[in-house]
Amino acid sequence: ALLKITAAQLPTIQFGDSNSLQVGDIVLAIGNPFGLGNTVTSGIVSALNRSRFRANSFDNFIQTDAAINPGNSGGALINIHGEMIGLNTINITSSGGSQGIGFAIPSSMVREVMYHLITYGEVRRGWIGIEAREITPMLAEQLHSEITYGLLIIGVLNNGPAQKAGINAGDIITHIDN
Image (tube, rainbow, N blue to C red; front, top):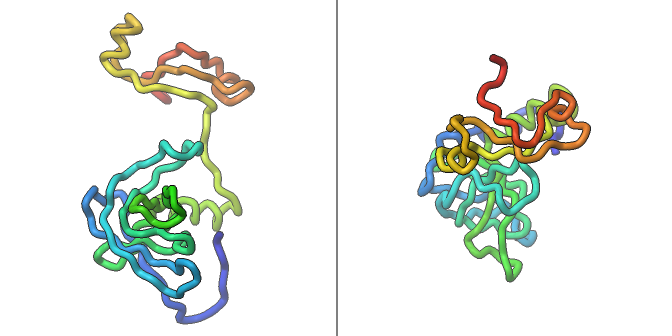
């Protein structure tokens, strides 16, 4: 959610650069778990660009072992400089508590979404309606193709932009706009 508040001298947090994060960086997760009030947990960045556990193709989570308990969602994930580098979002658990597998939305994505909401009132993302697989030398060999780079189109959404442009499953994209 994006709120517009007319007030002066509210405390704010500075955005950090989530693109500069590395596995092993120390982070703090701030939140209000279980309604206990402000709480801080510490951990490290365990992995970057996690996306396989959700259906959304825009997922690009920071994985951390800093506890992200129920109530921490929406709190800041901060770096050692006190900058927000992520927005605490979800944890994977079998017991309902934190088991060291928490996820935060990177600050770069938070800024992009914030910009779109302020500018357009909604999030706008380009899409072409394809499912693709990166061509590797091994895949090129399996396909008996001399093309060893690019994207192999493995699916096209009916009535999507790609289908309307004449892109078909089996096509290989090697360049965009020349």
